Length: 349
Ligand code: HEC
Ligand code: HEC
Image (cartoon, rainbow, N blue to C red; front, top):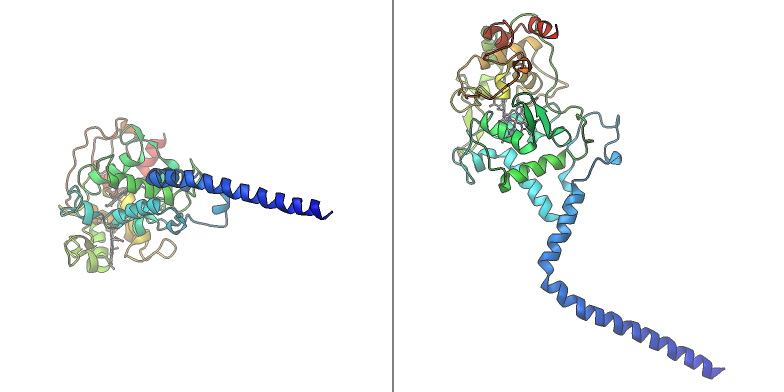
């Protein structure tokens, strides 16, 4: 009996020793391989992770009816440090664009001194603050302005050439990639093809009359000039690299090809976001004040952009485009300030 027990114990020890030797041998071969290829392996792993980070819509993260308005997908969730750095650089560029890409930009001098955030509030995440909630889900998309398909870099460059009165950013640059990655990431909780609730700008009812620059001037002086200044030129920061209060017209402002030079966009933006600090659910301006002050701002001079290729199909040109040609008989004045209901009704016929 004793002999068999001893043999069993011995066999047990031998088996364990053999396993240990095998593990040691494998380690001895693997460790040098891992060390020699460590950067490549890290790159591969992080690439795998990046693909997983921007993953398709996950129902459990955004349960319908539970969250009323779109919330940016949180950057703090990102585990992979290289990916997180890229997303954060994208956010930084949108928040402090001028420091990097403005008239004295450290990366390139290709825009007018505005920051994307001046118009896309809270780095493009504020509810109805012209946010980027539906960028990841809806692009690339067809846009009647160009008459073709537009992807995210092309749309960003639309704002560089118009809202930032500048020149396009290199599509292959680190900066473009970072901004696109940021937009895709924060919008990754919206199902592809759907518009996120609370994204972009909030609708505003048309007035029955034309918006009035004269009435708007009074609103402007009472409620806007304290920050944007009487002459609309805003106020620069101490370091002169960015605006504390951005200009609303004149040579440093967006040009007449930009979205905000259309009164409907301006009025929707202003009604639900200005004076600075108001939100869409507690606006301060009446509808009339919002339309009139927008008329006043857009009656002021600003840079002109030649856009011979815009609106190849004139019937698709927005009713509030501030200059012709148009597909109808309404005057440029009426297209600029309204009343819009007649123009809309004519369109529907
Ligand atoms: C002067 C204001 C202004 C500035 C500055 C500005 N934009 Fe815009 N941007 C707009 C307006 C207005 C729209 C159109 C909103 C609409 O049509 O509802 C827009 C639209 C966009 C869209 C498409 C959004 C969508 O849901 O279709 C993207 C992307 C965008 N801007 C990116 C940028 C980036 C990046 C910058 C900075 C490099 C920038 N914008 C600077 C005003 C601005
Ligand atoms: C308390 C200061 C303050 C007041 C008052 C104020 N704004 Fe602004 N406005 C800002 C700031 C700051 C920004 C940029 C927001 C950012 O970058 O986060 C801005 C941005 C804007 C923009 C988009 C950027 C641009 O340069 O075109 C418009 C348009 C605008 N304001 C219009 C108005 C109008 C109209 C009023 C009056 C009804 C008004 N603002 C009142 C501080 C103010």
